[in-house]
Image 1 (cartoon, helix red, strand yellow):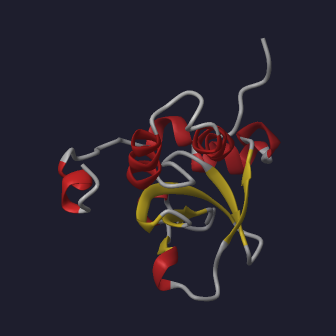
Image 2: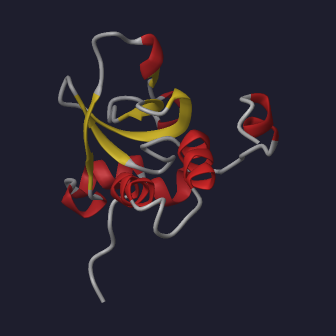
Image 3: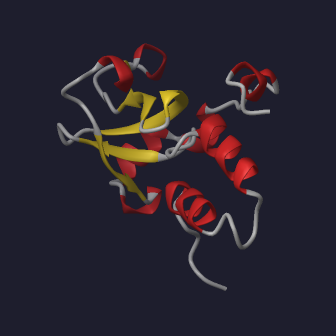
Amino acid sequence: YRAAALPNVVLRQLFMDKDKNVAASLAMLLVKAVGIYPPGTVVQLSDGSPGLVVSPGPNSLQPTVTLYAPASTKMDAPIVDLSAEADLKIVEAIRPNALAPEVMAWLNPEKRLSYFYSVNYAIRDGAA
Protein backbone atom coordinates (compact mmCIF):
# COMPACT_ATOMS: atom_id res chain seq x y z
CA TYR A 1 0.00 0.00 0.00
CA ARG A 2 0.98 3.60 -0.44
CA ALA A 3 -0.30 6.88 0.92
CA ALA A 4 -3.45 8.21 -0.69
CA ALA A 5 -2.82 10.80 -3.40
CA LEU A 6 -4.50 14.18 -3.46
CA PRO A 7 -7.46 14.39 -5.87
CA ASN A 8 -5.78 16.92 -8.15
CA VAL A 9 -2.68 14.69 -8.42
CA VAL A 10 -4.82 11.68 -9.40
CA LEU A 11 -6.71 13.69 -12.01
CA ARG A 12 -3.48 15.08 -13.44
CA GLN A 13 -2.02 11.57 -13.66
CA LEU A 14 -5.18 10.23 -15.28
CA PHE A 15 -5.08 13.03 -17.83
CA MET A 16 -1.36 12.55 -18.50
CA ASP A 17 -1.85 8.80 -18.97
CA LYS A 18 -5.09 9.11 -20.94
CA ASP A 19 -3.64 7.38 -23.99
CA LYS A 20 -2.48 4.42 -21.89
CA ASN A 21 -5.45 3.75 -19.62
CA VAL A 22 -8.53 5.76 -20.48
CA ALA A 23 -9.94 7.11 -23.69
CA ALA A 24 -8.92 10.74 -24.12
CA SER A 25 -12.53 11.90 -24.40
CA LEU A 26 -13.45 10.23 -21.08
CA ALA A 27 -10.48 11.82 -19.30
CA MET A 28 -11.49 15.23 -20.65
CA LEU A 29 -15.12 14.75 -19.55
CA LEU A 30 -14.01 13.81 -16.05
CA VAL A 31 -11.79 16.89 -15.72
CA LYS A 32 -14.59 19.10 -17.09
CA ALA A 33 -17.11 17.61 -14.66
CA VAL A 34 -15.08 17.69 -11.43
CA GLY A 35 -12.37 20.23 -12.26
CA ILE A 36 -8.70 20.06 -11.35
CA TYR A 37 -9.62 20.50 -7.68
CA PRO A 38 -12.70 18.30 -7.11
CA PRO A 39 -15.18 19.09 -4.34
CA GLY A 40 -13.74 18.04 -1.01
CA THR A 41 -10.20 19.11 -1.84
CA VAL A 42 -8.60 21.21 0.89
CA VAL A 43 -6.64 24.07 -0.67
CA GLN A 44 -4.46 27.02 0.27
CA LEU A 45 -5.25 30.27 -1.47
CA SER A 46 -2.85 32.96 -2.61
CA ASP A 47 -3.75 35.13 0.41
CA GLY A 48 -2.62 32.28 2.70
CA SER A 49 -6.07 31.21 3.83
CA PRO A 50 -7.13 27.55 3.79
CA GLY A 51 -10.41 26.55 2.22
CA LEU A 52 -12.50 23.66 1.03
CA VAL A 53 -13.55 23.26 -2.61
CA VAL A 54 -17.34 22.91 -2.71
CA SER A 55 -18.07 23.23 -6.43
CA PRO A 56 -15.98 22.83 -9.60
CA GLY A 57 -16.92 26.20 -11.09
CA PRO A 58 -16.97 27.17 -14.77
CA ASN A 59 -13.17 26.92 -15.12
CA SER A 60 -11.36 23.84 -13.83
CA LEU A 61 -8.71 25.99 -12.10
CA GLN A 62 -11.23 28.34 -10.48
CA PRO A 63 -13.66 26.41 -8.29
CA THR A 64 -15.95 27.72 -5.59
CA VAL A 65 -14.30 27.54 -2.16
CA THR A 66 -15.56 27.79 1.40
CA LEU A 67 -13.00 29.79 3.36
CA TYR A 68 -11.85 28.85 6.84
CA ALA A 69 -13.38 31.49 9.10
CA PRO A 70 -13.45 30.33 12.72
CA ALA A 71 -15.13 33.57 13.85
CA SER A 72 -18.26 32.69 11.85
CA THR A 73 -20.50 29.67 12.02
CA LYS A 74 -20.07 27.02 9.38
CA MET A 75 -23.45 27.98 7.93
CA ASP A 76 -22.27 31.60 7.54
CA ALA A 77 -18.80 30.77 6.23
CA PRO A 78 -17.58 32.96 3.38
CA ILE A 79 -17.90 31.23 0.01
CA VAL A 80 -15.75 32.55 -2.82
CA ASP A 81 -16.19 31.90 -6.53
CA LEU A 82 -12.58 32.07 -7.71
CA SER A 83 -13.70 32.74 -11.28
CA ALA A 84 -15.01 36.10 -10.03
CA GLU A 85 -11.92 36.97 -7.95
CA ALA A 86 -9.00 38.12 -10.13
CA ASP A 87 -6.56 38.46 -7.22
CA LEU A 88 -7.31 35.16 -5.47
CA LYS A 89 -5.99 31.83 -6.73
CA ILE A 90 -5.30 28.33 -5.47
CA VAL A 91 -1.63 27.94 -4.58
CA GLU A 92 -1.76 24.24 -3.69
CA ALA A 93 -3.89 21.37 -2.55
CA ILE A 94 -3.24 20.41 1.05
CA ARG A 95 -3.40 16.99 2.65
CA PRO A 96 -6.09 17.23 5.31
CA ASN A 97 -3.80 15.63 7.91
CA ALA A 98 -1.32 18.50 7.36
CA LEU A 99 -3.82 21.04 8.67
CA ALA A 100 -3.95 22.17 12.27
CA PRO A 101 -6.56 20.04 14.08
CA GLU A 102 -8.87 23.02 14.70
CA VAL A 103 -8.79 23.96 10.98
CA MET A 104 -9.55 20.38 9.93
CA ALA A 105 -12.36 20.12 12.48
CA TRP A 106 -13.88 23.40 11.24
CA LEU A 107 -13.62 22.60 7.52
CA ASN A 108 -14.69 18.98 8.11
CA PRO A 109 -14.71 17.90 4.44
CA GLU A 110 -16.15 14.44 5.13
CA LYS A 111 -19.45 15.81 6.46
CA ARG A 112 -19.94 19.00 4.47
CA LEU A 113 -20.26 17.84 0.88
CA SER A 114 -22.87 16.40 -1.38
CA TYR A 115 -22.03 15.56 -4.97
CA PHE A 116 -24.40 16.24 -7.84
CA TYR A 117 -23.22 15.86 -11.41
CA SER A 118 -25.49 16.14 -14.37
CA VAL A 119 -25.21 13.98 -17.46
CA ASN A 120 -26.34 17.04 -19.41
CA TYR A 121 -23.08 18.81 -18.55
CA ALA A 122 -21.17 16.98 -21.27
CA ILE A 123 -23.97 17.33 -23.79
CA ARG A 124 -24.35 21.05 -23.08
CA ASP A 125 -20.65 21.59 -23.75
CA GLY A 126 -20.82 19.57 -26.95
CA ALA A 127 -18.37 16.99 -25.61
CA ALA A 128 -20.67 13.98 -25.80
